[in-house]
Image (cartoon, rainbow, N blue to C red; front, side, top):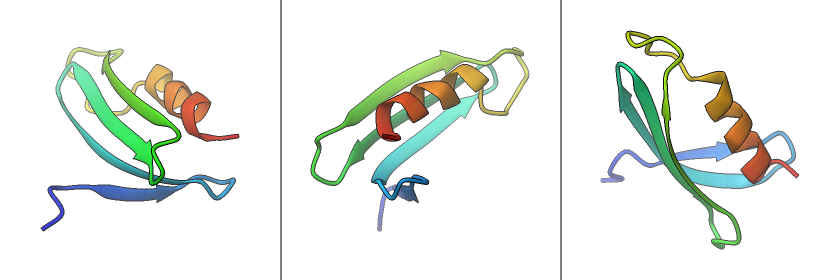
Length: 68
């Protein structure tokens, strides 16, 4: 059992392990590289209270944290 962990490899080859979730109105993520040299935790409101998609701000936060 993995508790819903996801593995993601960024375009520059950085391996990131993460758990994401949310409900209408917000998205949350906890993520880290395997060696814990970089970590990220955020909870961001959606641009639409009923929106289920990823907030563009959240995508930029993740890129800044993990893409070299």
